[in-house]
Image (cartoon, rainbow, N blue to C red; front, side, top):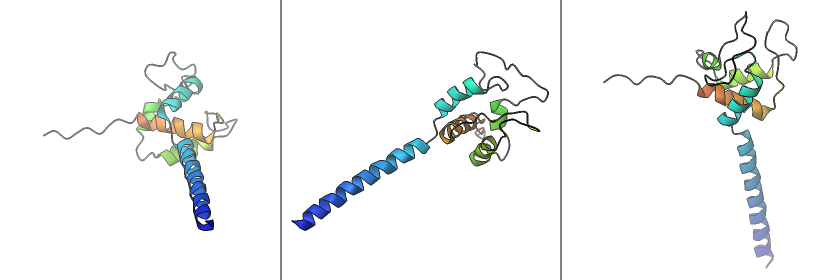
Length: 127
C-alpha cells in the first residue's frame, strides 16, 4: 500500500515538473509575428521594418538607419549577436544613434526572430 502511494505521489510530481518545463520552454520560444508587431510600433520612427509599414521613418539620417531586411542579410549575423547588440544599447546613446528600447528578454527574442525571418532565401541552383 505504501509503495503504491509513493509511486502515485512520484508520478504526480513528475507530471507537475514536466508541465512546468513545457510552460517554461513556451515562454522562451520566439514569436516572429509578435516581434513584427512590436517592431512596427517601436522601430518605425527610424527603420523600415517592413515594406508594408504604414509610415515612412521620421528620422531618415544621416547616419542612415538600415532597414530590418538589410540588418537580416548582414553576413555572419547570428541571433545571439543581434540579441546581445540590442540588450547592450545604452538608454541614452552617446556614440550610437539608437536608444535602448528597454524590452523584456521575450520581446527581444521575438524582435530578433522577426528580423532574421527577413533574410533572403538562398537561391536554388539551376538544373
